[in-house]
Structures are given as structure tokens and as C-alpha cells.
Length: 130
Image 1 (tube, rainbow, N blue to C red):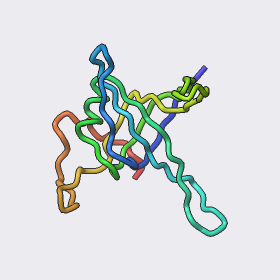
Image 2: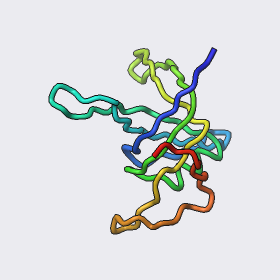
Image 3: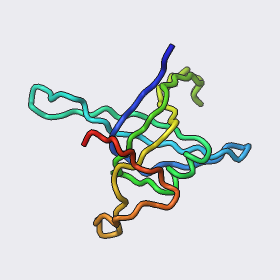
Image 4: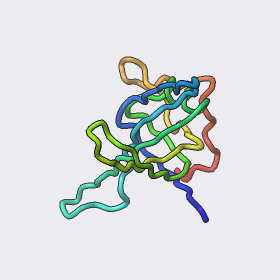
């Protein structure tokens, strides 16, 4: 059996970095991924996919990524259930990231690319199709 997902998209918000009671870092963020076709009006639609990154990867994501950054995420789909505060049962689908590749450079305060990656950022793969 296989459960692998590879996504390329832009962060819809800054990652939220938290720590479990056992001090394990976990970052959560949402990725906007364009659909490969246009709708009847000729516009591209996007899917907004929740991503979770744990441990060192979570810290790297939480410390270096911001809204609008282009990333590639590889991981697995996880569907979990929980009980909300109002007592209703809820289901959540999210991607648990195994790797996050930074595909663009961070921007400075004026919005211009800095041209440098953070020291602990993952390297870009040499075989990107673009």
C-alpha cells in the first residue's frame, strides 16, 4: 500500500509553531495549490490544503517560512477524528510533511527577494522541471 503526496504551492498564512507538552515542535500551515485546469469562466481555482510538520522540520518551517512563500511538500495524507468543545465529532484531513523544499527566496521588508536562503533551509533539488 502507498500513501504519498507531493504538492507545490504557496503558503496562505504564516506557519503556527507550537510545542507539545513533551516539548516536541510542530508547525501547521495551509498551502494553496492551483488546479491543473480552468473553470467555465477561464479562471484557475485552488485547493487549500492543511500541512503539519513535526520536530526539526517543524522548527525550520516555523522559523523561516512566511505567507506567500513557494514550497514543495512531500508527505502522507492523514485523516483523524476528534470531539469538538461543543461535543460534535469532527474529521480533519491533513498532510503530514516528511520534507519541505523552499522553492523561492525570502523577501525583505520592502518585498524584494533577498537572494539568500536561511542557513538551515533544505537545498533545492537539481532536477526541478522548471
